[in-house]
Figure 1: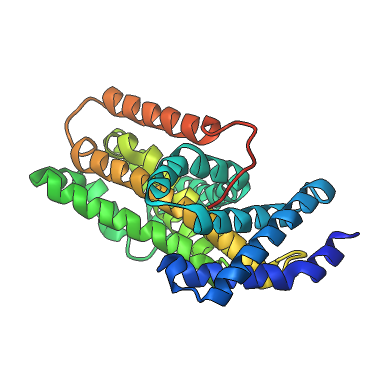
Figure 2 (figure 1 turned 180 degrees about the horizontal axis):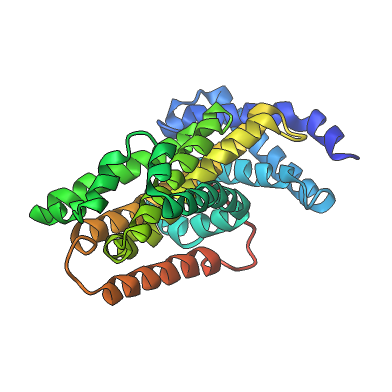
Length: 324
């Protein structure tokens, strides 16, 4: 049997199971009728059997990921207790999040490129001619004038570290959520946001380099930059998953492909929150301080090594990957 035939035969049962799980998501099994509970058990057993067949016959097909996620959700709805939910939080950070990151790394890398290519191009333009760099991004003139005047505007954050850190965390989370949500617009807004932020950073860095202010700028950006940019790339990649699922659902229905992408993307977005909280704390306290540059670079390097060691190495065992 071809994958297309298997999907056509079974997809109505999968979609019905997903609908029941959606209904039980907030209130648990108590909100379901007796008929729905019976149907849930039947469809759960059927989906488990379908997953085994898909793994055997279509092991590399994205259908396996979809069914794996569906069966995991159903298992959680049927068997999860309060203690199980607590274990689920631990499992999320120790296993689910890093596995999901590795399964979708290509989208994160695409987001990285959408940020870095405009950043590098605008850096070169602004380095050679600061005025030309300013023309690339209307509204950035004040920041460029600050650089000309030797004004380190970020120093003002030290006037109230706790308030500054809170403000920065809020702003970073807002940008990250926008990068994620932009995926619902076929990923176009996500691409725009990544390119815009890359363009802005490249111009500021290029002007600073041209005017001999680079050490001051990187003295502020270095400590928190690795974590902050990583979270933006991960969230941007999550948004691009949504857009790609809408544009190219493959052999799955568009609804099924979007559901699979949305659940993966939501996991990644949730994982970005603690990363941004740590980045915002560093940016509010250490980045604007007078600490030596080598200290800030060491913090950047250490945070990057810890983050990517966790994302690339955590949760590696022989159990099947779960996404929820």
